[in-house]
Image (cartoon, rainbow, N blue to C red; front, top):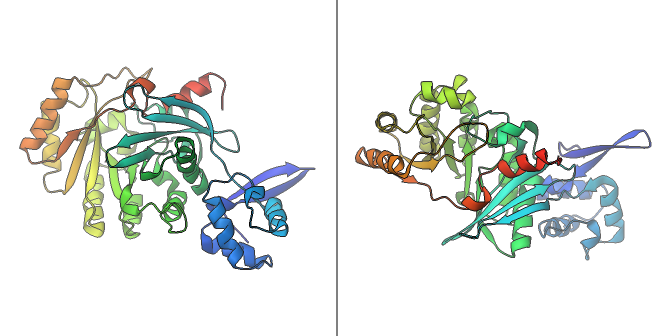
Length: 361
């Protein structure tokens, strides 16, 4: 069976490949099992074990020794091991640094809201986008995550905290739409009735604005929420902080967002990091309101996180309130995001950066 999800390694001078079995959906797993002479029902047994977050084929108690032997020779189970875990004293937000089979690390954050537990997961090790206010890009880009590595962040957190996560935000390390195919596969797996069964309407994807991929995502009609990192009222300001703005103008991006709503019926959220003296003036609020006047959207104002080497400072509380008030008077739905886990640097990228500086991968 040919699959894009393989792990290659050298043994005795030979290059061998193992299938990343947790990145297969049930149909693909069924094909793998039946093509190798085993009964079709075995696939569902294996699939159910994989979704119980087992880390070894030997844990699959109702699977025959013959099948286990085949799986050990042809497949591997990806894992997300907890390297570091920080718990906020203020609100019990939990931040994880997970490591994968190859030693690469990413961050995830679990937040407890009245409506249940939400997790912010990573989609890449590092990021290519180079946003100047973001800690993730400071450590460079290593690779994209597989679907199973995204799943494992959720399953490992659930197992560690003994909770059920009900909402997922793809807003951690990396640009989800730069890892489009693997993210789409992850979305299908995580929403599968036979898997974690987290509905698409409980999932949010954050993007810095890769316009063609927004259209591709819309055509899938997944019903997920699109969150767009805007962070500026115009191209001039946006180009100073976000290199992606040199590829796609705000006019192109906002049109894609309007079309996303028209195609999916899902309101778009715009993320706006408030940076003192950069994008938080009254004129910026008025210009932003004019830009969004004919859109069904919500603006999420985020006091920028302090990242070493950027020189950026978060806007004052007074500036934040003035900004949100102007948007409100212009009939733009807007809120200032409540900061969770402030004592553990809960924004993604900073924990891995420190780990790397200390000699980790």
